[in-house]
Length: 249
Length: 311
Image (cartoon, rainbow over all chains, first blue to last red; front, side, top):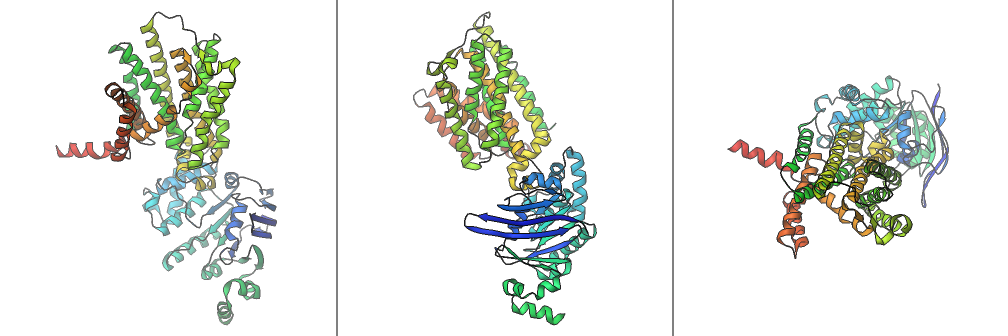
């Protein structure tokens, strides 16, 4: 498998807070990785460092064969890095269609608005929002806005997709639906790194799990091995959950 | 083209017939009306489309007036002075915009406000070139007389207004306008979908300064004498915002109507309340904004339609 993303000893500091300490990580093409860890572990900071929102204070980030440590957000978007936000970020006054069209329009130079809208329609169908395409984004339900985020990210034709808690705040039927979409994306060959608190989803979808704790990478490997790792259990899962996983084999 | 944009062009073209109806006073008012509309429409690009509340209009009006004025005083024709003022203002604004537009909201407003002071001081101190606080005399063009002169500058300002309106309409229909709208709604998301927000904001700021600067140059040629406290008057920054609010933020037609309504109010109030005119004008503006927070354009959808239905 060829490598698409590599973090080399990446650190990020916010004043006195060390949000990421010396994190090294490699992501291969086609992988679906679960990024987990307690609140404040640095998961979103890691995504922000890679996408150029808050560049690393030290270390290097390589994407698809080139260094992107200091690359600006819009440039990394054009290189094929896209993400969804934990707190959804729609263009509130635009229709769902124009939200997705904006992503198609600006992620590729030379794209026209008409072509972008046509492409946007396809992605809305994929995430099941075709009936809402004319509706103002601000009026959509949370579950719909989460799917709109996903459609926006897809319209950028990503090589690597970060999903930042796409399932947070959804009910179980909605989670199931979102999980199905992620499976489909993985089947299409998109490399995915997902931040997720629902272990059911992580174990269902991910082929590999990476654990952050206090800004440090404390585990990286097969889901089963990571679940059994005492450090992970201590930091994140809690004794009970680990026992249950072990018991159910 | 949308109906509102068409209405805007029809409105502007109909203003061109003004000289048929009035003498020098009407021409003077018409010239000011066109100038106000240029300022308001230009402000709308950065304030209305991109959502950045700029107070820099006076800075670029003054800069353009001085670029144009200095060129005119040295014998250059208006056909060179006005485009030079426009181009100069565009460049300076676009460059400064790349730095200033990193600030958001109130911080940007204050920073843009400070531009007026910075430019005023620069002009004040470049005495050799600009005459400093003494002002700058611009020689009268050898024209046929007062009326012909008034007519000439009216059409000059009008032509500039037409160009501004066309620019604003083109921007609103283009990828640039779509991007500015994205920036206004959610700048984080705009960055994340691959939009070069710094570039777009700089262009918007440049465009919003370009025609203001050109209008400043026409103004300088029209009044024949400028000094820093006149052309860097902060009211040139505040008025366009009030006009845009009166008319309806973001809508080019609304903003233009807002400019005309504002000038009408200003003129009527000034005539009738010579002692307390600014107070009365202020109260009127507050009342307008209180009862029509979304501007005159919001009337169109609501009351007028309601009335037609119930006749």
